[in-house]
Each structure stands twice: as C-alpha cells, then as structure tokens.
Image (cartoon, rainbow over the protein chains, first blue to last red):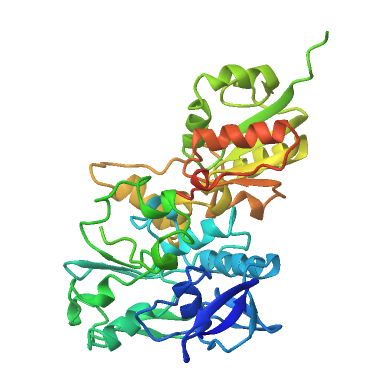
Length: 239
Length: 181
C-alpha cells in the first residue's frame, strides 16, 4: 500500500523522499511554479508554489511529502498571494509581452494568465538592464530575467560549464556570465547546451528562431499552463 | 414604448498607436448591435473634442506628456467607469521602452541621428504638448476601475467586456481572450 497525503481534499500517493511538488505532478495535479523544474535540484526561490502544509506555509518544491499530511494549494488566499508575486516580477523587470519573441510560450506570462492577472498593479520600476547580443547563436535579454537560476543550475549540473551566475543584491541582482569580459560570446556556452534552452521566460533565447511559430499559435495562447503535459513541466518554446 | 436609455461611451488614445481603437472597429457587424445600446461621446470616431458625463471611458495608451494628463483627468472626472485598455494604458507598453533613455538623447536620435535624416530639427512649437521624461501607465495618474489587457485586446474581448459592463455584470474574459501580446 503506497503512502499518501491529502492535497486539496484529494488523496495523492507518493514515494519516500518525494517532494509535494513531485508527488502532485506525478498525480497530474498542477501547483503554480516558475523556478521549479523536474530535472533540476529544487531552488525554492520564486515562492509561487507556496502551499499550506498542516496550516504552515511552505514551498511545495522543497518540502517532502509525508504520510497523512494535509496540504492546501488551490485556495483564494494562496492564489491571491501568487498573483501578487507574479505582479511583482512583472514590475521588477521590463516584461513587454508585445515585443517579446517568447510571448505565448513564456511561463511567467502563462502563470499570470492562469492566475487571472489583468494588471501588474504595482508601480513599475522600469530598471535599466543590459542586453548581451554578443553570442552568435544565443541572446541574453536581462530585461526579461526573473532570477530563477534554472540556467545557472543547467549549466552547472548538466552542461558542466558554470556559464551563468547571479551577481549583485536586491534590485541590483542580475544574471552574469563566466567571462572576464562579461560578454556571453566569451564564455563556453553553446546553443546546444541545456542552459541555452531551459529559460522559462525570454531572457535566454536562440537567435533566428523567435517567430518560427507565429504569435497566436503558441502553447499558452490556447492552453492553460495547468493543462499542459505533465503539469506544465514540458519544455515550451522549443521551436 | 420608449427606447432604453443608451450608455454613453467616450474613448481616447494617449501614448498609444490607435491599435486598440482599430480592434474596437474590428468587432465588424457587431458595431450595429453596439450602437443600439451605446452612444459615443468624445472619441476619434465622433471627433468630439471634450467629453461630457459618460457611463464608460475607454482609455488607450499610457501617459507620456502634459496633454495626456489633462485628457486622462477629464475622462476620470466625467466617466463613471474607466477602463484601461491595452498594454500601454496598463503597463506603459512599448512607449515605456524609452524610460531608460535620457529624453534629450531620445530626441537627438529621432530628429538628428536617425538613418536618412539631414538637417533635422527638434520640434519646439509652443502648441506641442510638453513631453515627460518617463512614460507612465494611466493607473499611476488616476484611479482605474477595469483593466482590459492585450496588444491590442482581441475584438471579441472588447465586445465581451463592453456587453458585460452594459449589462451591469463584472466583466470576465475567457482564457483565450486574455492576452498580454
């Protein structure tokens, strides 16, 4: 008899050591998330997957499932907090969907659609952020970066290259690259690297592939991220 | 039998491209149904220059100059319900890309150094509205009642939104009508 816990009244089986997120995904239940990716170590930083675990709040991607625990995720309060988190991400960067080639395949946008965000609500920062177009095949567009560190993890854990890192603190935190010049072209990044295609937003994109699938015909133009295969953990944007 | 009172609607485009207005016109033959229940006050469609008391104000575009503020405040004062329509009204949108460029540098680039320009001059006619150094979403200047995202919002979304408002319902968009692009 498999061990189980309760998520929003539904019995979810889990294997010993699995996180709430992993068990929920395996059972086909979507918990909103941005920095989580099933192939990488949990990061627990975006806080979108915050759930109530027996009355205490915790990240579903870092908390392990336990026998009989009661978890709430789809509550008005938690989704309200998630919407506010996404709104803060929108105003903290320069996320201009109309001019972004990732629009329609972007998980930040999709999470906002899922949560019914009609306005970013908070006062925009309009921060000055650098674009690095030096690499022949990959564009680094920091205006769209949400600091999820998926590229950092992919480059370090899969590609074995340590191309990306986060530098600075607070509002000055930014994605930096491992080259004395600070230019992406001077790193060992290759377009075939996992790090070059794992970005959930349009911060790291392949050049010359932005509009292979036209705007309006992309994944999240028609599908709620909650319905996407394996609870939104496929790889949208591989066009 | 008396005709039901028509809703008064005013529309304007501030720092926008009139794309949202084009999308409004794109409801095609539903325009005939619309004018049965709606009467346009100030709008590029009527060319009326100032709005009187209205039920619904549709504002396209963000705020990039002094005139935008005057128009926006006139709308807020006169419209019972104000709808921020499209990406620019809601977030500043594409015009807000200049928020990280010094205004003077921006003018120099546009009027002096742009490709193909010769002997360019920066316009300084006193009738031209004073530009702001930054572009703002309208919600940073006045209270906004509803937000209708999209670049532009799809014609069907505008139709759904207006008919919901006209019927006294809280406007609600289906998943495929909610777009930021």
